[in-house]
Amino acid sequence: MTFKATVLTLYPDMFPGPLGQSLSGRAHENGLWQLETSQIREFATDKHRSVDDTPAGGGAGMVLRADILAKAIDAATGEGDQRPRILMSPRGKPFTQAKAHELAEGPGAIIVCGRFEGVDQRVIDGRDLEEISIGDYILSGGEIGAITMLDAIVRLIPGVMGNMESADTESFETGLLEHPHYTRPAEFEGRGIPEVLTSGNHKRIAEWRQSEAERLTMERRPDLWRRYIDGQEEV
Image (cartoon, rainbow, N blue to C red; front, top):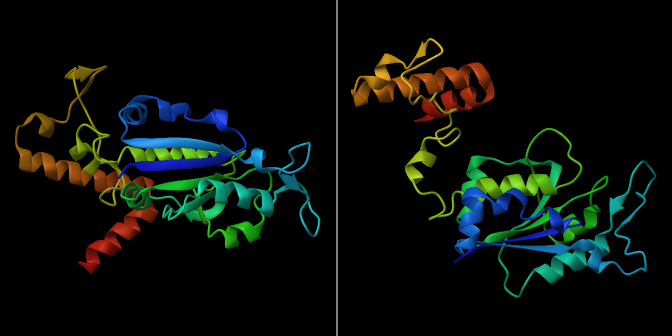
C-alpha cells in the first residue's frame, strides 16, 4: 500500500513546494508516497469560475460554496476510497505527532485547503470532513498547513527515514521535548560538551538525556509536562 495524498486547492502551483525536496522529495521520487492536486476552480459553473459567495446572514469576507467544493471532493474520491477527508481549518483539532503516525499508517488522505472566511458547513457535514489545525494562528489559506502536515506524515512512512531510531527519540514521541545535542568541535567559543556525553557510560548518558528532556519540557511546555506527569502516575 502506497500513501497517496490528494490536495484540493485554489493554488495547485504551491505543491509540491518543500515536499519536493529532502526526505519527502526523495521518497516521492522513489515511489514511497504519491501526491496529486485538484484545482477547485475547475468545478465552478459560471464563466468567471467563481467558487465563493457572500456569507448567509451577512458579514465580512466570502465563503467557499458547498456545491462546488462537493463536486471537487467527489471527483477526487474513487470507488471504495477509504482515505480520510481532512479540511485544514483554524478551528479544527490540533495536529499532533500521534495523528501523524495514525495517518502515516493508512492509505493516504484527501486534504481540502480552505480559503476566504471558511467553507460552507453543509459540505463539511455532507462529505464528512475532519477539521485539523496546525496551530492557534490564522494563515491566508490551508495550503501551508497541508504542506506542514504532509511533511510530518511522510517522514514516518517506512523507508523514508534512513534511521527510524532517530525518530523514536524526537520531541513529542515520548511525551517530552527532545534533549540537547552536541557534536564536534569539542570546544566552541569557550563552551564545551557536557562531560557525561564523552564518558562512554551509556547508562549515565541515557539518564542525562532523560533529565534534560524533562527539564526542557517543564520549562518550555508546562502543558506537555502536565500530561507527561499524569501519564506517569497512571502507569
